[in-house]
Image 1 (cartoon, rainbow, N blue to C red):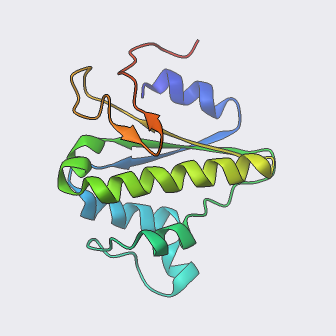
Image 2 (spheres, one colour):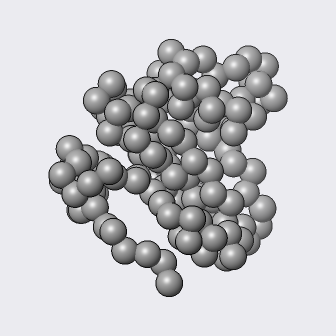
Image 3 (cartoon, rainbow, N blue to C red):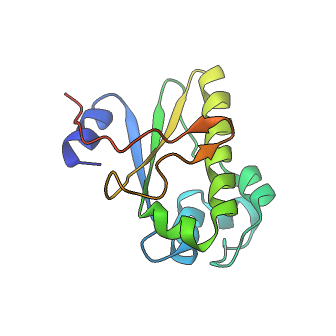
Length: 141
């Protein structure tokens, strides 16, 4: 996602949270654990090898203020997908569930998968009845 897009979102009261999967799932999980204040919530750190989607669902709280929003930017997601597509599908399901719950409470959360190119293996993947339709190269204006 470009700086221009991020600036546009921040100007509309979104906090932009980036998870970079280019180094694999382990480093991304450690960063996610820090972002979600995992230690404060549960008394331990989210470990690089942690793959419990139930635990992730329980701790998936960005502390969004009323009327506020969070954009979860997933960079290098194809690397994580190659490593463990079932877990990545689960993460996207949690993002979807959380998005709907936050919206019902007057808050906003959505995820953006940043694709390197239109030939990404993620294009066309079905996710819980939804399909990643294409890579989009446009900009927010």
